[in-house]
Image 1 (cartoon, rainbow, N blue to C red):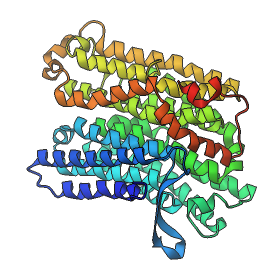
Image 2 (image 1 turned 180 degrees about the vertical axis):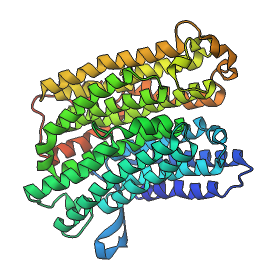
Image 3 (image 1 turned 90 degrees about the vertical axis):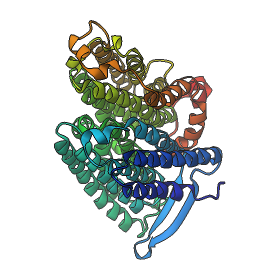
Image 4 (image 1 turned 30 degrees about the vertical axis):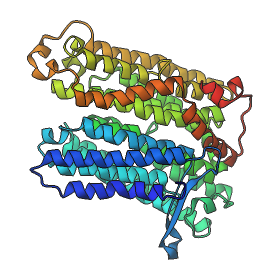
Length: 511
């Protein structure tokens, strides 16, 4: 199976599914939902087979494919996946079917085309897979930009209050970042011998000044996409206005393109510039952790609160990347996966609460657990996972980031630890104000608040809960895939761990 064109098939399959769904009759919305869900399951099955076929001890990049596209520019459809990309592809494959199930009635409530909504979700899946699978810098840039389009329409056409403002802001921020990257991509093509192939460019010797400018062009685009402080202001608006399912993909996957891009492009292609900019990147990371956590504490809108928590979590990921140790790097990549699972679950559950109440304001809830105890329990679990409670997957990630950072930069690790305390404050405050305490009499007058989780919603949350618990106790299958890619990235920038790993190896530390 290692010779099967997994990556090109996985990229094209959702696009074909989107075309099928988009042209289904509007008066048969259930058929559109069923076809979209079935198509996403096909992608999941193929992704699982690819995961099983991946050889963690083999070549750094596997499943490589290359097809000529624009020969005169040295552009090709080149796909390849290392352990980091593979983990993100699996996250996409798992989340999209669950988002489709969770969004079963979202398009109908917006009174817009149901087939188009689910077709947009599949187009988004196509672009997300493409951006992580691309091994050609120009191809990566194309997917990076095209990915904005389906999300723009999902927010602007199917979102809630101020959806058009949020969609335009999201699009403009990302477009500006893309323009910086386009300039850097062209510059890289010129100094790299007129090729966009990642492997060829990784061998190019670039002068110090040029390397720093090129790094900055890529980094600004990725920092906006992630988003890192102070480029974060678009996310609360977009996350708050987007439908819950689209918001789960926005925060769970799309934002990871920023941190993935830093790992795949900034560090290996511009190693000296990465080390030169590292102190600034670490400063942005710790500021983001504390600043976003403080803002989350003061939020009254559930989806905006979850969006701010994600900004704080991306601060941890940024710290893990620029600490330049294998423990912190593995923790950062694992955090990208675990954050997608935990925050994806939190967004979906919050969306279920909002759909029942008809309001996203925390002040409109209170004691909801008395009416919907199972939904309240899942919200509590998702909140605990978000604050990295031991026994949940995010704890392993956060632990590795902090311990890997502490060995090289104690002040940064200590300040970042404050984020854990603040996370407990905003998560427990949210849970207490929404589901605990005295029952808000207004809730008893809302019919939706008398419906606990139905079978479809249980199917949505159960796999995410299971994965969060499983990876919280046994992350080794994932760290075994991540570790070689992280180690290769550290080798690219010429960094080695300054001290022995805790327990002897990263895997033992992860246990």
